[in-house]
Length: 270
Ligand code: SF4
Image (cartoon, rainbow, N blue to C red; front, side, top):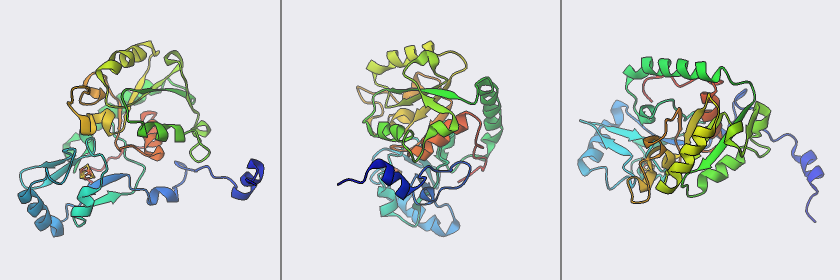
């Protein structure tokens, strides 16, 4: 006989994470995004990869060859792990929930150090807007042509482990009651007009979050006949959450970053 829910609750105790108040051990294990090792020791391997070409390695074109090095566009990465398997000295998984960024350009790593001033200005502008929101915010989620994977992670935000209600974050079906527009999916032509109508129906100030590689860049389907290059091509985006799909922790990081309740990454390169 299945254990009654009340007894199961007593057995398991409190399962809700304390993040972001305290670190969460699960984050230390979760492979959130790929990173490139740019230490001098891996330079020969990076040069060898550049010589053999990066196209055979990455199915989504997330690896970019610069003059003599490799850049990674996390906004295009689908997290297939092929690069990590093929060249583990150069590529590895970064285990962190703090993956969201305030600009599209900052999803490309290693970052350029000169964009810190721009980031500070964007952050101040966003803070001025969200300062008018109270401690309780409502999210309108729109699936603009997703494969469904992001929706599972968005739904998980409401389960007892993440329980976003504890942070004053709620989902609403009505754009007229919403403060945050959370967009998943590639932004198909059929969904672009409904998405823009939803944005227009929301009372100002509005924060827009593009969640997942598909929403950020179109992912594997970028520039296809039924897709666009992500929802940023026709909608102004405030926060970009990479991942295919992003984990609930990454989504939560994006939401809290948008609300100014968590610091933005300020290191120039990573
Ligand atoms: S994980 Fe896959 S999609 Fe991402 S950079 Fe590596 S090969 Fe490309």
